[in-house]
Image 1 (cartoon, rainbow over the protein chains, first blue to last red):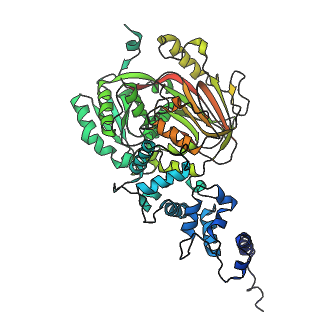
Image 2: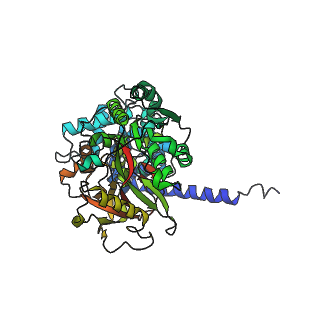
Image 3: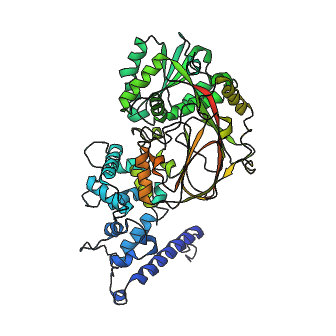
Length: 183
Length: 376
C-alpha cells in the first residue's frame, strides 16, 4: 500500500548520499573552526583569522579577499557562517561552472568593491601575487607596463576599467582558468 | 653575386595571388583592413589577386588541399597565424606536397595572433610598430614579391605511437604556463591579439608545476650549419634528407630517445616553449636569436621553483626580448634540432602554433628551409 511510491530510485538515492556526505564533511570542518562557546549559538560565525588557517586557503594570495567576498557579516569583518562557508566551497569546487568561477574571481579582484577593476585594483592584485616585501615587489615601471597591458587586452570599451563582462570575456580564453580557481 | 641574394626567389608574375581572409579575424576587422589598405596596394603594384573568404574552421585547409596550384603564384593569408596553420597543413596533406610546399606563402596581419607577421617584420630590421603599420609594411613586402625559405617543424602526437598524428608547424610548440597565453585568439571572435596579461595573473595565483620528461637533440656545434649563412647546396640537401627520412631524427614515441639526445634531469616545469621564429605574439619576442630559416628549434624551459615575481618579470622582459639576458637560474635556453616531451599529468594544455592539440606525448623536429615565404 504505497510502499513502491515512497521508495527513492537507486540512482537518486546514491546522489543524495553523496550530497549528504559532502554536506556533513563540510559541517564537520566548519565546526572544528568554531570556538566551544560558539558551537551552541544558533547561527555561529567563524572569525576570518580562523578561516585563513584552513590549509586550502593558507597559501592562497587572495585569501583575505575570498573571506570578504563570501562573508555576509554586517560588520564586514570577513567572518563566515556555515552557509557562507558552503558557498565558498561550492564556488571553488571542480563542479562549479566557468561562469560561477569568473563571477567570484571578479569580485575577489575588485578590492574597492565598486563593481569594476580599475588601475588601483589591478595594482593590489599584482602585489598580492608578488608579495609585499621590497625585493619581491615589481618596480613602478614594471607595474605600469603590466597594468597598461592588462587594460589594453581587457578593457574593450576603453573606459579605463575592466567590468564583469569584459573580465569574463578575457577569462574565457584561458583553457586552464577553471582549474586555477580551485582550492 | 653574394650568397644571400642567390637564395632569394621571386614570385612568378603575372600568376594570380590567392588571398585568404577569415572575416572574423581580429575583431572582425580583417576584411575592412583588406579593402582599406591592401586592395589598393595590390592594385597599384599591379598584382592580380583573388579574394577568398573562409566560411568555417578547416575551410582553408580543405581548399588548399584540393586546389590547382598551377594557377596561383602565391597564397596569401590575411588573418592570424591560425589560418596559415591550416594552409601549411593543407599543402602538406597533398600527394604532391613536395612541390606544393614550394608555393610562396605570404602573411598579412589581419588584426590578431600575428606572431609570424611580427617575426617577419622584425627580421627586416625595422623597429617594432603598431598593428596598422605592421600591415602596411607586410603589404609592401608582398608587393615586392621576394621569397625566402622558411623552416617548418613536423610535430608528432601520439595517442597511438605506431600511428602518430602528424602536423606541420611554423611557429611554436608550447606546454605549461605559456600554452594558456598563446591560445589562438581567432577561436574567440572579436578579440584582438592574444596577450598574456589577465589570464596570466589568474594562473600565477595558483602557479602550477607541470610534471613531465623532456629530451632533445642538441645542435651539433661541429657541422657549422647553425648560423644560417652557409652555402645553399648542403643546407638544401640536408632539408630534403631530413624530410624524406622523416624518422631519421625521431624514433617512435613508444621507444626511448636515441642515445645522442639529452634528457633533462628535472621533471618539474613551469613552462616549455619551442620556437622556430622570433615572436610568439606581436609583443612576445620569445626567441631573439631566431631567423626565418636558421634550421633550429629554440628551446626555452622554466624549471619549477621560480617565484611569481620572477615569472612575471620574465613575461614583461619577453616584450622586449631581454628575458634571456636576465640570468634567471630557473630559465634554460638551448638550441636543438628535435625534441620530445612526455607529460606525466593527465590534464593540461599543449599548443602548436597557438592551436590547442591533443594532450599527451609529443615530439618534433625541424625541417630547415622547406617552405617559402614572401618577405625581404
